[in-house]
View 1 (tube, rainbow, N blue to C red):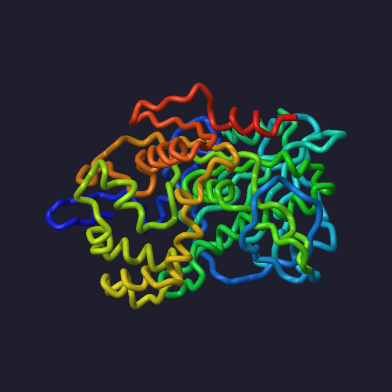
View 2 (cartoon, rainbow, N blue to C red):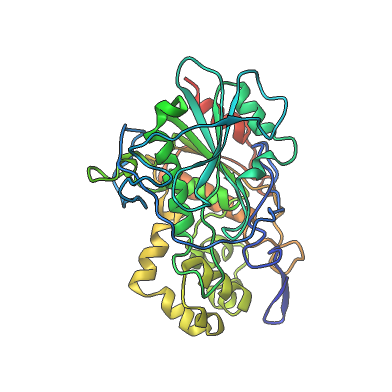
Length: 399
C-alpha cells in the first residue's frame, strides 16, 4: 500500500490493510521481526466469559476490572474445572511425556480458546503464554506451530508449559464498536483463567510469563505494564486472579496503543516532518484509527472530526488505558524487546510504521527514565543484548 505524505511518497509495510502486517510468524524468541500473517480473518462478537475467582497470582497495585461474567455453564467457567482432553499434538519431536489439549475455552466466544502443552511433572511448572500477531484483525494461535516451532519445543523440553492463545479480533472499521481493548481484555482473561485453574493445568500461578510478535508483542507489554486488573471480591472468581505476568517479551512491537503518540513521541525526534496532522491526513491511517478504537465509520472520511473525537474525555481515557509508554514504571515486571528492522525514513520504500525500531528505542528510553527492568535488542541503533527473548523468559519462570 502506497500512501503519500503531501508531495513525499511514503511506503508503509501494511500488507492488505492498515493493520494486516501487524502479524509476524517469528515465535522462537530469538530475533527477527517477521511480517507474515495468518490467513484467519477478523471476527466480531462480544461474547462474554463466565467465572468467579480463586487463588492469588503475582503482584500489582490495583486497576480496572476484567471482562468476566457470572460463572455460568459456558466456556471458561470459574466454578466448573475445564476438562482437558489430550490428543496428538500438531508438532512432532516434543519431549517425552508432553500432553496436548486443543482449543481449551477460557470464554464463550469461539475465539476465546487456547492450545495447551503440558510437560510431565510431579510438581507445578512455570508457563509461557504466546499471543499471536495479525494486527488484531487476523492471525491464529496456530502460528506458534509455523516454521520449526522451536520455541514450543524448547519451552516444553525444559519442563515449562506452553500456552498459545486466540482472542477476539476487530471487525471492519465502522462495524467494530469496542476496539483493541476487546482483544487485550481477552489476553488478560486467558492468563487469569489459567491461574484460577492452576491445579488443573499443573501450573505455578506465580511463574507465568508472556510473549508475542507484533500485536501479540504489544499485548504482552500491556499486560506487564498495566496495573494489576484483579478485582477483589464479587461473583467472578476468575477476575480475582492477578493479570500481571512475571515477565514479558515483545518481538517487533509497537511502543504504545495510543496512536496519537506515535508521531510526536516515537518518530518526530528523528523525522520532524512526521506529525499527527500528516498521519491523519491519510485515509488508510484514519481507517486504522477508527477500527482500532471502535469509532463511528463516518470519521474515516473526516480528519478534523476524527481528531476532535480522539480528544473527547472518553477517548482520552481509552487511549491512556492502552498507552504502554505511560503505564511503564519501575515496579513493573522485567521485559525484553526485540525490533530488528532497519531505521528507514518515512520517505524510504522500506519504512514500517508499525514495527519500526524507533518503537523499541522509545520504550528503552522510557524504561531508563523511570528505572524499569528492561532489556533490548535493537540492531538499527546498535543496542545489543547478550541474551534472547526465550532465554530471558525461561530464566524468569525458573524455580
